[in-house]
Structures are given as structure tokens and as C-alpha cells.
Length: 251
Image (tube, rainbow, N blue to C red):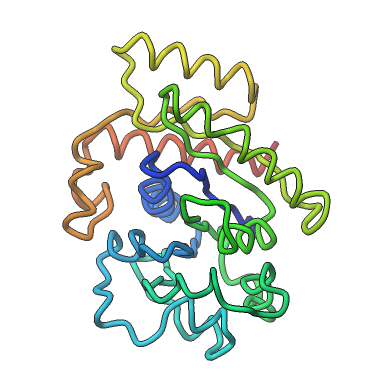
């Protein structure tokens, strides 16, 4: 079972879009996928078509030990499930809880191998919730735009990963980098994409997620790109990315 935190402390780079559509693409290729919405904004939950007002429980209830995590899993589609979030999750950042960095990991004790992939949508910060993802996951996929400011956000993120690796989770490592919102017509996009590749080498996926209006529109209807626009560039790119992710298993 691969446990992957999908992250960048900069917002608006395509993390939630990637978790949802990569999750769907993996399930289409025969993998069982569980997504975790670890952001109190709950954008992944909403984008999956779940109405927050109808939720009885969320990831918050599991983290505080109120309810077993298996009981809050929501089915999204065949082979794809979600542990939803709720704005109340923001309380985790300020609560005084023992072993607060390991709440997520502890909540999965006894969970078993019920899926092939766990994809964690991390908040756009390096706070306590992101630390929980880093202490639970074994891999990190960094999602970044091919823009100058997004490039500048990477060093603090990598420094945080190194610190967690040294002190809290020696298994964690960056195994993939995804370029999102890529416009191959723009010289700046091509140049920064090449800079990212020069830095991360083989860790950067060949597939870049092209800027596509359908990817921006689909969450407003609570749909993934494959249900909303199955012939779009967005659907093509995420299916290609999923194939690369699966290919890593054989490397």
C-alpha cells in the first residue's frame, strides 16, 4: 500500500485537483484508492460531490478519537473512497493534544491493506495538519505551478521534509513532482519547468498537467474531470500521470 502526501505550502497550485483526478484515474486503471481530505477548507470533499451540511462525521472526529476512521469513509465511485473534511478541522491546529503530529497515523492503526493507494490532500501550510500527513505518509508528491513564485516556495517545503525525515518519520521521501497549470505556449512556463526538472531530475513526472478550463469548471459541479469532460486535456493528462505513478511500482 502506497501512502502519498500531495503537498505544497503555496495555495492554488493544483493539489486538490491532482488528488481527486489522479485518484479517479488510478481507480480507472484497476487500483483501489482512498483519498484523505486533510484541509479544513474541505475543497476535496466538496469537489467530490459531498455536501458538508449532510456529513455526520469527518476526519476531525477520527483525529480526536471520537470515532474509528473506517466509519467515516464515503464512497465516491467504483474503487475510489474519501475520508471527508469539515471546517471544524481547523481546531486541530490549536488544540493541545498529546502526540499531535501522529494523530493521523494513530487513527489508521488496525486499518489493514484495504486499498492500493492512500492519497492525502494537505493544506497550503506547514502547520500541524501537514506534519500529520508527513508523519503518516511514506511518499510525497510535490505539486507546483510552472511560475516563478511557485518555484520559490519549494526550498522551505524541502527543508520541512528533511526535518521530519530526521526526527519523526525516516521513511518519508519525495518521490514525485507534478507540474500543473502548464501552458507550453509560454516561454516562462517552459523555462521554469526545465529548472524544476534540473533540480529534481528523475523525480519529476514526464506528464505535465496542462492549463485547461474544464479542470477549473468541474469542481463547481462536484465532479471529477472524467465525469465532466472525459475528452479534455485534463482527463488525458491525469490518466497519463496515473500510468506513470503505477509504473513506479515496478521500478
